[in-house]
Length: 120
Image (tube, rainbow, N blue to C red):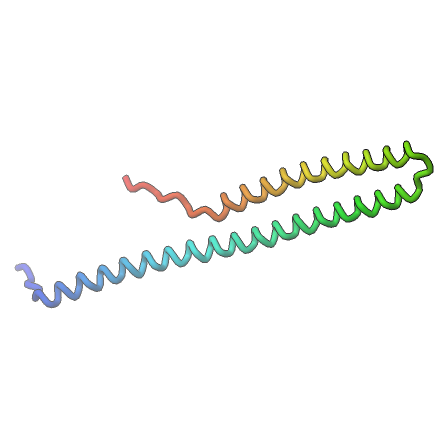
């Protein structure tokens, strides 16, 4: 014998079901947002540390160059000191560009939402 469900009860059940589905989607969205925000925050801290380390290297290179310039006795010594400084500068900036690019790519990959799974 089939049970007859009053129209008002059926409508309420459908509304509750829709509310549960919406709450589930909201919960999933909040979890994704929290995960992404945490990943981005951690990544930005890492980028800040990378830039601070690079700035320290550059400052040390400047100090070393000024000390070396103070010890130069001939014009050729000054030229060689400046040449070494520019070589070091070029190398450090090239390495830093590579480091920052890698950091950004890893951060983007880590912060990207997971790919939706396809239902079979």
